Image (cartoon, rainbow, N blue to C red; front, side, top):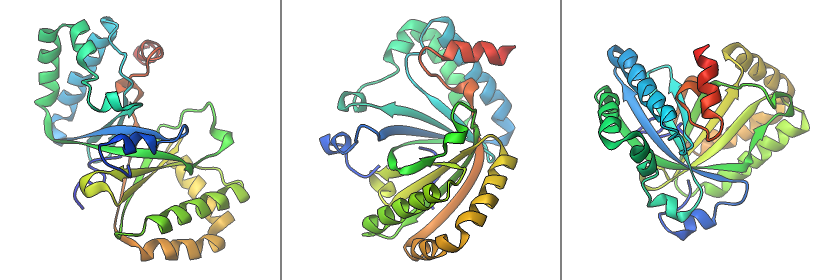
Length: 263
């Protein structure tokens, strides 16, 4: 399963044209997802290098690029950058950051990051709000535990995928299921039939409890949907991990997060 999750979490249904973004509704969000695989022996060096680069960016007030970092249990790191317009697709979003930090210093720090990488790739995913579900009870709470479920569907099944997604969300709303998941649709190349479901929870225990309660509430009703789902799935992969606030940049919030984690 080439880069199913290596390219997420990852984290879109069209091509590099205006169609890509005009199809993005006001509630949907396009992301560029960079996937980085690290050999276990280099994880500590990698995280120190990323931390040093991040601190240099904060010190230079160069955290204008929104970046969301995640790590799986097999030492794969996913970095998601929102794409808001066509210009952003063809612009080096890091140019201003490099200039503020200083090109020589930035490249030296970045070089130490890259030296730890075993493999990296970049892909694009569209978060579809109409197909995603977030329970009101979790608003305002940290939901840093992650479970990525990647589905590679058979060609020509997009309408059925959409129908199943809508029906499943309707079941969750009907029974007031307490869980959170986003659906991300891959675009371009080998990912155009890939959909990633990204579940989030407070921690692993909470996630398992939510799944058990959901099964109690919708178990019987969801079975026909699952049968339809698996009938059109070619491949499936699951990974678990965490959102990493310390490696993420959210403009106007990054410095506060960094200071809190240093306490």
